[in-house]
Image 1 (tube, rainbow, N blue to C red):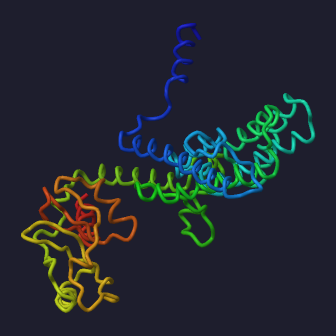
Image 2 (tube, rainbow, N blue to C red):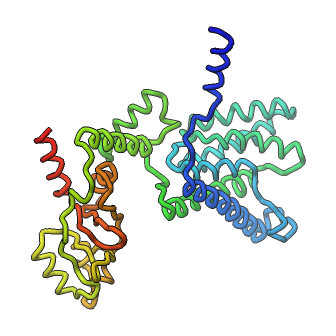
Image 3 (spheres, one colour):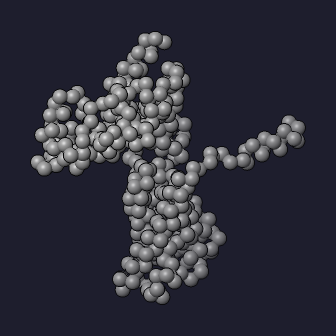
Length: 358
């Protein structure tokens, strides 16, 4: 290999391996990590000053930090890559706690900072792997405990439990609230025998390829679904939502009463009916909502928001809405006005006709 080719090969490996982060996702992750750190410090500060057994500080929450630096990495994982196995609650809480405990243990055994630091990091990796709680900040937590101890900070059991473990719990709880509110799923459960065979198979593939610590089953499943949708669209040609929909569907006015809604579901073969006023789409009423509805409820009271699609949207955008989750009716909306609906039956019929003609 010539020097130029060698330099080019090295350069290829040094360039970014990740795609560009979208602006909404960047804003979401930035806001989330900042709020998570602020919330964690505020709660730890409150606990410390409410508990006489723990050492107090200046008394001013704006001038006192009760944090450890690896919390920043934990917050980053939980809020930026929430589907990663490394960011899940067990990994974050147990990994950080085990890592810190490893550092404290090595301090007791070795009075030499360099040896204690090296042993602490190595021990934390072994302990986290044994507990199935791999969490990169946990290794940093082990090193942090050693550095704090030799700089004069008390890093005993109270530090492990009241600062590291409790702070990790706060970060996880924040992630469990913030991520779903901003459109991300957290946490996700590892596949078990109670889950579909497809999920168990994906987990087995990741394990066989030694990627289970890097890629979550949820992420891989989403990737495969997107690839399948693209392949289906390529095979069947481009289909717009406007050509699949049931045009001018029956709608309910927002003032429709419970008896009127019951009659509508009885007379029409839909489990969900759109609510519209003067052609403007407002929401969707599901048949199941009528079961426990108050006698005075109207369509406006029972309607819910569901994803909508534009008439020009193509098959890859339509498929994920109706093939995953509980959505059975996809409203087709253009500039706020209801154009039609696509049901699962519509989608199956369109695909069947296209395949017969292929």
